[in-house]
View 1 (cartoon, rainbow, N blue to C red):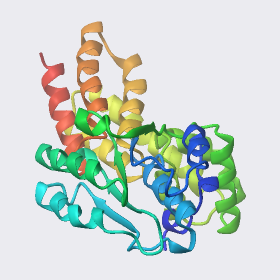
View 2: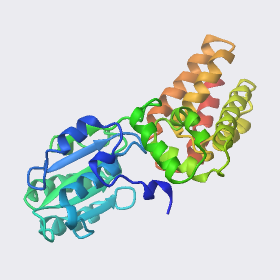
View 3: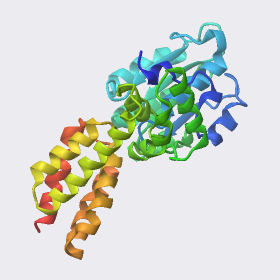
View 4: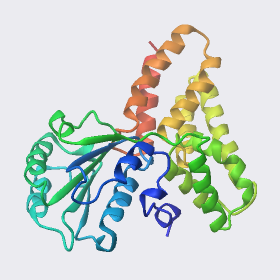
Length: 311
């Protein structure tokens, strides 16, 4: 079992840095919980974990796949699947007042699917609580937003006391080198505050005292080389280094930010910088919405960068 699953929050008290949500959620039971909720934030910031923790706390011993139904909008995003939820949402849970249906990555649902979902949400509030998660609130139709209590989940800050305490506990319990603790703030920065990616990185490293520091130095080296090759218009090499940085565990947003910080001092003219920022701004917004893999994201970014910088 990987670390992210082994240490997935089991209760609201296990969540990190989402005080507004926790404060409200601790006052709810299955009868008083809002009928529909929308959790918005970039990947890896705890939206799905919050849904699991809330449901476990409310259901207690009755937390069960029959009472907590999970679907992912990336896989089941059409109207046919939403129609299947209609009968499920009207059924009573087993031993509980209401069941919970988690619609993960709901921003991937088609417009007809969202229209059908709106009606289901209106008709099933006595038997079902809907929790939707989304990386980007933009694709969520206004009619769905109006029916949901919305919480925004932010990336973990690099000096978060709660995050450091949580990660420190994991490192201690897993017998990982204590030297890694000093490098955790930089790792949080490089993963753009994604606790999920942080755990994936430390899970992948050999248990050597300098392994995490060497990993971070290698990541910085990828971005340094990417920036230098960008100045030489060697776009295939830039693509290779950015891809390596992503494969090493950095987030898309983290890689783009790292490239921006390194490229700005190297730009020969203000026009070059403006053309760079035209591409950067577009892809920062696109980073959490991109439906394909990291390689295609980087390739499209570089293709657009090349076009803009050659104007």
